[in-house]
Image (tube, rainbow, N blue to C red; front, side):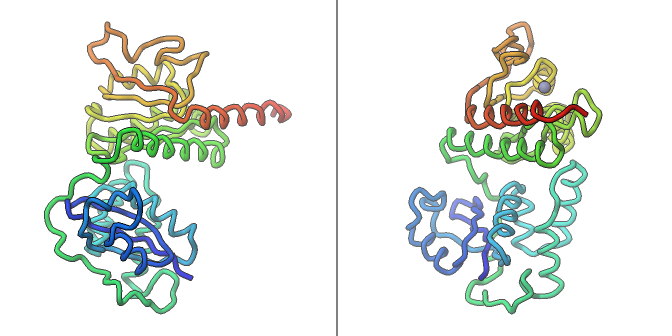
Amino acid sequence: MSFWVYILKCSDGSFYTGHTDDLEHRMAQHQAGEIAGCYTHVRRPLTLIFSQDFPTRESALESEIQIKKWSRAKKQALADQDWERLQLLARNRQAAGSDRGSILRQAQDHHEQGHGSTGSPRTDLEVPWKTRGSTGSPRTDSLSMPTEAIDEHRMRHALALAERAEREDDEIPVGAVVIDANGEVIGEGWNRNITDRDPTAHAEIVAMRQAGKAVGNHRLVGCTLYVTLEPCAMCAMAMVHARIARVVYAAADPKTGAAGSVFDLLRDPRHNHRVEVQGGLLAEKAGSRLSAYFRRKRGKPAG
Ligand SMILES: [Zn+2]
């Protein structure tokens, strides 16, 4: 059984990335507008510009999530099978400390072997693996989604990073994502205080550092930062310095929160830049993860 990751180009030039175990059927559904509430529904006709099969649903999902985070330029390079450009773009991202490049490796393998990543003979000939008339610069993927849906999607991304903080580094599970004005992810971070022996390595700082490198500027004008816990004073001031436009946080922090709980630094009228703040999005999910972490820590013998 194969699981497909595919990229569609919509009539307005934007991209849609999805996965399925039946590409032909899914394509027919997309073209007919049969998937209720789907982004592509009002953007038909659609062109399949990329498809790749994976041996398991998990590996397909992982790659789908990865591609969804990519810039339009990188998606286009993948669709064009321009491996050189893709590598170059991936290297730039790696320099920014993100992107593990597994889809890239798979794409390269595919390029070199002329086969699917499963190694089995490919049966996708009915589904052209080609770019068809995809010139012009596509607009952003998500601009026409309702803001609440975008916010929730981004916060789930931050929550996934928080989970990695705990799972991979045994750090306090806090995750942060920086999104630029075009809706692209330009920075990801989770708490790394213990791992990096760095008192400033809060999720927000890690994400903003990466974002600064990605845009080549210490100002993150027009960017939105999503974080699973209300920022502390250090992070709030860094956001003011960076000229972050908007901050969305999940759980409030009644002990050190600086977005209204203890201090209100983001909106302080004495600063020459004020940040729009929204709190409480998926707060329960973020809060219960934090509580579980601290419960587990307390339950463990010291040392
Ligand atoms: Zn902080």
